[in-house]
Image (cartoon, rainbow, N blue to C red; front, side, top):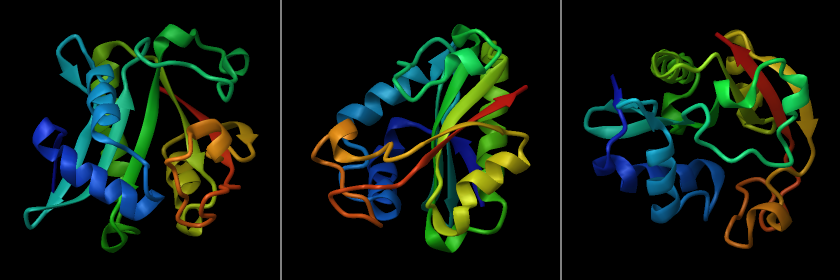
Length: 184
Protein backbone atom coordinates (compact mmCIF):
# COMPACT_ATOMS: atom_id res chain seq x y z
CA UNK A 1 0.00 0.00 0.00
CA UNK A 2 1.26 3.45 -0.93
CA UNK A 3 0.14 6.91 0.27
CA UNK A 4 0.76 9.72 -2.21
CA UNK A 5 -0.51 13.22 -2.84
CA UNK A 6 -3.81 13.46 -4.67
CA UNK A 7 -3.50 14.56 -8.31
CA UNK A 8 -6.18 15.30 -10.92
CA UNK A 9 -5.51 11.84 -12.38
CA UNK A 10 -7.13 10.42 -9.20
CA UNK A 11 -10.33 12.49 -9.38
CA UNK A 12 -12.60 9.92 -11.05
CA UNK A 13 -11.57 7.18 -8.60
CA UNK A 14 -12.08 9.58 -5.65
CA UNK A 15 -15.60 10.45 -6.82
CA UNK A 16 -16.45 6.77 -7.32
CA UNK A 17 -15.18 5.73 -3.88
CA UNK A 18 -16.89 8.73 -2.25
CA UNK A 19 -20.24 7.67 -3.68
CA UNK A 20 -19.74 4.04 -2.67
CA UNK A 21 -19.00 4.99 0.94
CA UNK A 22 -21.08 8.13 1.53
CA UNK A 23 -23.84 7.98 -1.07
CA UNK A 24 -24.76 9.32 -4.49
CA UNK A 25 -23.96 12.97 -5.06
CA UNK A 26 -21.24 13.08 -2.37
CA UNK A 27 -18.77 14.78 -4.75
CA UNK A 28 -18.83 15.90 -8.35
CA UNK A 29 -15.96 16.87 -10.63
CA UNK A 30 -16.43 20.65 -10.30
CA UNK A 31 -16.59 20.45 -6.50
CA UNK A 32 -13.55 18.17 -6.30
CA UNK A 33 -11.52 20.49 -8.54
CA UNK A 34 -12.37 23.42 -6.26
CA UNK A 35 -11.55 21.44 -3.09
CA UNK A 36 -8.26 20.39 -4.66
CA UNK A 37 -7.22 24.00 -5.26
CA UNK A 38 -8.27 25.01 -1.72
CA UNK A 39 -5.93 22.37 -0.28
CA UNK A 40 -2.81 23.74 -1.93
CA UNK A 41 -0.97 26.57 -0.18
CA UNK A 42 2.62 27.75 -0.51
CA UNK A 43 3.06 25.07 -3.16
CA UNK A 44 2.17 22.30 -0.66
CA UNK A 45 -0.67 19.87 -1.40
CA UNK A 46 -2.59 18.70 1.69
CA UNK A 47 -4.70 16.02 -0.07
CA UNK A 48 -3.65 12.36 -0.10
CA UNK A 49 -4.72 9.02 -1.57
CA UNK A 50 -3.97 5.42 -0.67
CA UNK A 51 -3.27 3.04 -3.53
CA UNK A 52 -3.06 -0.74 -3.28
CA UNK A 53 -2.35 -2.97 -6.28
CA UNK A 54 -3.14 -0.08 -8.62
CA UNK A 55 -6.52 0.64 -7.00
CA UNK A 56 -7.48 3.73 -5.01
CA UNK A 57 -8.64 2.40 -1.63
CA UNK A 58 -8.76 5.62 0.36
CA UNK A 59 -8.49 9.39 0.25
CA UNK A 60 -8.08 12.36 2.57
CA UNK A 61 -9.27 15.79 1.38
CA UNK A 62 -8.03 18.76 3.43
CA UNK A 63 -8.54 22.50 2.97
CA UNK A 64 -5.55 24.69 3.78
CA UNK A 65 -5.93 27.16 6.68
CA UNK A 66 -7.65 30.35 5.54
CA UNK A 67 -8.79 28.75 2.27
CA UNK A 68 -12.14 27.26 3.21
CA UNK A 69 -15.61 28.67 3.86
CA UNK A 70 -16.81 28.49 7.44
CA UNK A 71 -20.47 27.76 7.84
CA UNK A 72 -23.16 27.53 10.51
CA UNK A 73 -21.61 24.30 11.85
CA UNK A 74 -18.30 25.95 12.76
CA UNK A 75 -18.14 26.86 16.45
CA UNK A 76 -15.15 29.18 15.97
CA UNK A 77 -15.71 30.87 19.34
CA UNK A 78 -15.06 27.51 21.07
CA UNK A 79 -11.82 26.67 19.24
CA UNK A 80 -9.43 29.00 21.05
CA UNK A 81 -7.49 29.47 17.79
CA UNK A 82 -8.01 32.05 15.06
CA UNK A 83 -10.01 30.80 12.09
CA UNK A 84 -7.21 31.80 9.67
CA UNK A 85 -4.84 29.37 11.45
CA UNK A 86 -7.15 26.33 11.20
CA UNK A 87 -7.27 23.92 8.28
CA UNK A 88 -10.38 21.86 7.53
CA UNK A 89 -10.26 18.09 7.28
CA UNK A 90 -13.02 17.63 4.70
CA UNK A 91 -13.13 13.90 4.12
CA UNK A 92 -11.30 10.72 5.08
CA UNK A 93 -12.82 7.92 3.04
CA UNK A 94 -11.82 4.26 2.93
CA UNK A 95 -13.01 1.34 0.84
CA UNK A 96 -14.62 -1.36 2.96
CA UNK A 97 -11.70 -3.76 2.58
CA UNK A 98 -9.26 -1.06 3.77
CA UNK A 99 -10.97 -0.30 7.07
CA UNK A 100 -9.68 -1.28 10.49
CA UNK A 101 -6.03 -1.35 9.43
CA UNK A 102 -4.92 2.12 10.57
CA UNK A 103 -5.10 3.61 7.09
CA UNK A 104 -7.39 6.50 8.14
CA UNK A 105 -4.82 7.58 10.69
CA UNK A 106 -1.99 7.35 8.14
CA UNK A 107 -3.89 9.54 5.68
CA UNK A 108 -4.66 12.02 8.47
CA UNK A 109 -1.01 12.08 9.52
CA UNK A 110 0.12 12.83 5.96
CA UNK A 111 -2.32 15.74 5.77
CA UNK A 112 -1.27 17.05 9.19
CA UNK A 113 2.37 17.12 8.08
CA UNK A 114 1.35 19.03 4.94
CA UNK A 115 -0.85 21.63 6.66
CA UNK A 116 1.76 22.22 9.36
CA UNK A 117 4.26 22.94 6.57
CA UNK A 118 1.66 25.33 5.12
CA UNK A 119 1.53 27.13 8.50
CA UNK A 120 -1.66 25.77 10.11
CA UNK A 121 -1.82 25.53 13.91
CA UNK A 122 -4.87 23.26 14.14
CA UNK A 123 -7.45 21.43 12.10
CA UNK A 124 -11.18 21.03 12.46
CA UNK A 125 -13.51 18.44 11.02
CA UNK A 126 -17.15 17.43 11.08
CA UNK A 127 -17.04 13.68 11.53
CA UNK A 128 -19.80 11.31 10.53
CA UNK A 129 -20.99 9.90 13.85
CA UNK A 130 -22.94 7.14 12.11
CA UNK A 131 -19.88 5.88 10.20
CA UNK A 132 -19.40 2.11 10.50
CA UNK A 133 -18.67 1.41 14.19
CA UNK A 134 -18.32 5.19 14.69
CA UNK A 135 -14.82 4.75 13.20
CA UNK A 136 -14.55 8.38 12.09
CA UNK A 137 -14.85 9.79 15.60
CA UNK A 138 -12.68 7.01 17.04
CA UNK A 139 -9.71 7.52 14.72
CA UNK A 140 -9.87 11.33 15.05
CA UNK A 141 -10.01 11.06 18.85
CA UNK A 142 -7.06 8.66 18.79
CA UNK A 143 -5.11 11.32 16.85
CA UNK A 144 -5.82 13.84 19.62
CA UNK A 145 -9.02 15.44 18.34
CA UNK A 146 -11.36 16.98 20.93
CA UNK A 147 -15.14 17.16 20.59
CA UNK A 148 -16.34 20.76 20.23
CA UNK A 149 -20.04 20.21 19.40
CA UNK A 150 -22.50 17.72 17.89
CA UNK A 151 -24.60 18.95 14.98
CA UNK A 152 -27.76 16.90 14.29
CA UNK A 153 -28.80 16.40 10.66
CA UNK A 154 -25.64 18.11 9.33
CA UNK A 155 -25.95 16.42 5.94
CA UNK A 156 -29.72 16.70 5.52
CA UNK A 157 -30.74 17.68 2.00
CA UNK A 158 -32.09 21.02 3.20
CA UNK A 159 -28.46 21.94 3.99
CA UNK A 160 -26.44 20.10 1.33
CA UNK A 161 -28.83 20.02 -1.64
CA UNK A 162 -31.13 17.53 -3.35
CA UNK A 163 -28.32 15.64 -5.10
CA UNK A 164 -27.05 13.99 -1.91
CA UNK A 165 -28.47 10.60 -0.90
CA UNK A 166 -27.10 9.17 2.35
CA UNK A 167 -26.11 5.48 2.30
CA UNK A 168 -27.91 5.02 5.64
CA UNK A 169 -30.88 7.40 5.49
CA UNK A 170 -31.58 7.88 1.78
CA UNK A 171 -33.05 11.24 0.78
CA UNK A 172 -33.68 12.47 4.33
CA UNK A 173 -30.30 12.20 6.08
CA UNK A 174 -30.58 12.29 9.87
CA UNK A 175 -26.88 11.63 10.58
CA UNK A 176 -25.01 13.71 13.14
CA UNK A 177 -21.71 15.53 12.71
CA UNK A 178 -19.21 15.66 15.55
CA UNK A 179 -17.27 18.90 15.23
CA UNK A 180 -13.78 18.07 16.46
CA UNK A 181 -10.62 20.14 16.76
CA UNK A 182 -7.07 18.82 16.56
CA UNK A 183 -4.37 21.24 17.78
CA UNK A 184 -0.86 20.63 16.41
